[in-house]
Length: 562
Image 1 (cartoon, rainbow, N blue to C red):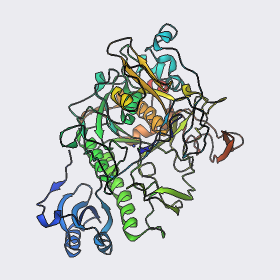
Image 2: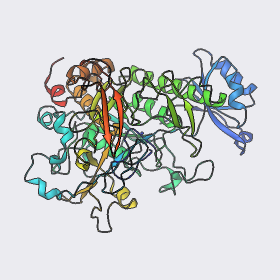
Image 3: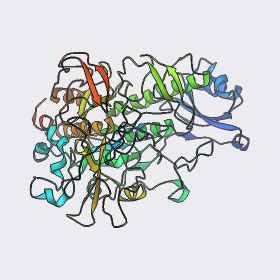
Image 4: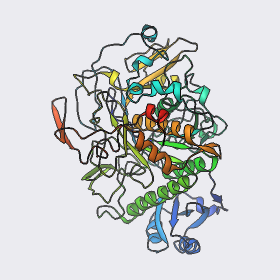
């Protein structure tokens, strides 16, 4: 599975996961034969008619369009169609409409003796079992599992709950693999009416290999309250699990969660659903969106990499252009966009090798040299607040990407290696769908967790489940929750409820963050499993490549004045 922002599971393995308003046109029967492909064709501003003509001259048919983002939906031959379009100066990008991909990597925690290391290997934990949830109830304040939430204490969210828990008029969009809207620790804040699923499950990919697996719903379209992966549910829980005597509390426990699904069950996030999800969020008045993924199939999108074919270059140009237009559209409608930075242990200002792209279909990866002209989307897109991850000690997590130009903020993302030995308790605990835990063998037939990465809370019935994960996927929702607190405090009446300009939200997030200097020495050496790697931190206390403007602070956001 491909997830963008969570990291290799602290335990199990590196998991690869992060109302279309387009206008449909008549689709000729001839365009539907097996040799045709479907494409998103992005055109330069003011050159709509030229783009229509270019599609026709290339032997294709225009079957739809989205004027908001400046692209046509077209059918054409699989061989040579995109390249022919690319010769026309009116065309700025062409992507196959494979319902595009994103990547999120998560540390799931479970004891094992396998001590492999490195960003592409599973990080293992040898921690012992925790007490049952009931054993913590009398020893900690707040929700039953509050004692395990070091992340909330780090950013002062536990104290902020009483002062500024958020406002029901604030809408937070979770663009992910879905949200388990029936989970007892999400349901009270889940807005089912506004939630949408922009993804159709695909049992197999183009090569006949298993992708999403058997469809669970009619038409392969999951209901809006379903998450067959768990990644989106974990993100939503960190943002806004309510204070209800169940499990945990999120950063902003009184705001509403809107599931705006853009990711496949398999964890891939394709371009078209990402565009549809972001524009939908803008049109319904969502205040903040969390994007804990990158749009695939390219980890780094290069406009003109010599090792790529012309078709591959056009696809990367389409991803860069299309997502930037969607981001700009959303920001103009007062949507604050927050993204996970990524889990490749990479200085994004100095990338050198991309060996995981193109990541779809599976088995197409090649090693290519990349440089700073290549960007991770959306983390490096303009107008996006990108978040690195820290462990319980406050150090940058070993897996977290970084960069003086790319890191805007830091937040708790978990790091099982942040301390002596390994410990699952250094990961982030948040809600998990019970059916996913059963399907993956993490709980037994009676519902009892099989490993310390899963926690069951039965203080209220039905029991609810939680899982420890690591990753910048887990860091971003902490920042999203703090942004929701700020909108709750300073927003004005607007579409959907309250609204606050993204520039203002960004300024307040930076003002209330806890500045953190680079470590000494700046070339910090991470050691794990007998190996080491050095990450170089650049910048000063007020802005640097590890922590950006600082670690988000919910308490300051709840109490400080602008």
